[in-house]
Image 1 (tube, rainbow, N blue to C red):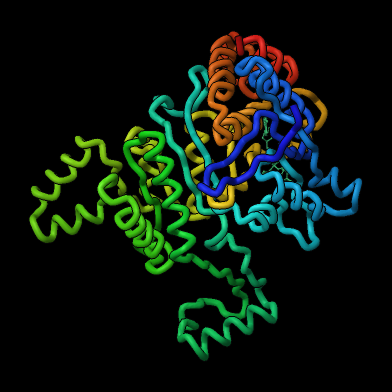
Image 2: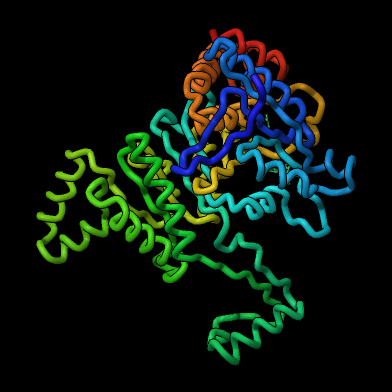
Length: 424
Ligand code: NAD
């Protein structure tokens, strides 16, 4: 078998050879420990599931401290070129350079490859210590917009020339200056939210929900206050749902129209009928209320589509509810080009670098997401089942060990060996 590239087909479907080349960034701090454990389990699961017919050819690419020490650059152009060329890659956590040009390597990669979806599945594994009473009720997939919003990086420091110019422009051209309470000492951030950006995010969430037979997509926004940006996101989301997915979906926008023309009872009857017919329900919730609902009624939510900043908060809050902050996986994806970077969601935990003690599950589960993205579902399912069995057996790394009673403490590599044993 010759290793080959993953490519995007004419039909918009990913073409995955049996022996694909996949670039990896090992990561800084605890990265090497959790990556080597994850790689062992990924390779064993693929071998187990396909009996040697499929295999991954890993190719190291450099970013972060390791890249800086070897090349003098935090994110060498070669790394971006490889990620672009091979479409699918995976990365450990990276140190955020202090000072200098790059604000965050992760943000730079997302922007360069236009990875517009940050995908965060959140579910509970039996036995994982959780702060809520019923963590089993949380089973959500969060689609966070990844390229726009106040996170676009258009910010001006208080007292800078740019801030002064912006205030002057507001004052003289736009009439918004009175709303700036302390103009002399204000810093500014700009929040771009576009129709295209909103539509492509909500479209991806709806496609995913239909493919996975999920009951609903909830648009989470603060459109009650930020009417044009977050309100626009909601409106464009509903519009794309109705325009492109027709009778596969039923939206609260349609419910609202029916209520106005036919009355509330008739609108409710239509909603019930749509649910009974198995249509995907598209609804929306204001972000602050959603954070309450996450604790009060998480079972009501399945797929969530939201803007960048909301998505950041919601992903971590949801992960905490299932005790998964240290094991939550993530991916950054452009479904149109096929580019995808799968990643650990935690940081480099520098205090624990080279201690072989940390939990590799976040990076490993992002590897599971990667296998699913490639269509290698059998290998993905084996790892998930093995992880569930291993947690249940209470043979775990220190983070879980500290919160469980009667657990056995394992090193990172021992935990990986345990997972491999449980693959069979
Ligand atoms: P961190 O996630 O690195 O560590 C916080 C704490 O979480 C650790 O002290 C440890 O107790 C725990 N923890 C983290 N990963 C764990 C694991 N796999 N198993 C068990 N426990 C784990 O956050 P931080 O200390 O705020 O950030 C350290 C560095 O990482 C910074 O340079 C930051 O910019 C960077 N960072 C990178 C990413 C990324 O690359 N995706 C994300 C967050 C932070």
